[in-house]
Picture: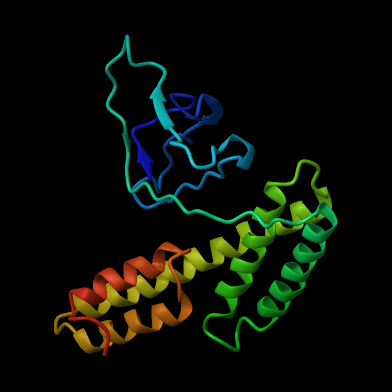
Length: 207
């Protein structure tokens, strides 16, 4: 997450390789989560890797800016040939499409669809010459479904807050919604999982 940052103010690099800039502030800066894929070819194996956030205007300026809640996810790159990778990606896409079609049947099917499209996209990120049509399909679908998941998370969190802020706080209802959030967001890939677990700790954990 990042805030108090304007356009092309804070650059990002890994091991001296330029990755561009931190996106500038938006209206939802306080809650938005930013994601950046580190190029596999720029990551050193069995060595120390250095990621640098550099405010290119300080000095001479002394503008305040902030980057926080950094989280690094390590994803193993499959040791496959390009043809094998494309075959695996197509399987991911087919499976994800089925989960998406069944999104109203199981609570975690939309999450599984997003995760599958995301895995397909990331597999192709490591390819020197990736199939553009498959890449754009996976990238677009994972982005669009992520927005749907974000909206669902926000609505469920709003239900929790309504239950707790009513004239007679309904802690039981709030606890039920938080447990339900974990069924919709079963693993940490989406921040709603961590949010629900954190709030459940205040209730003494799962029942």
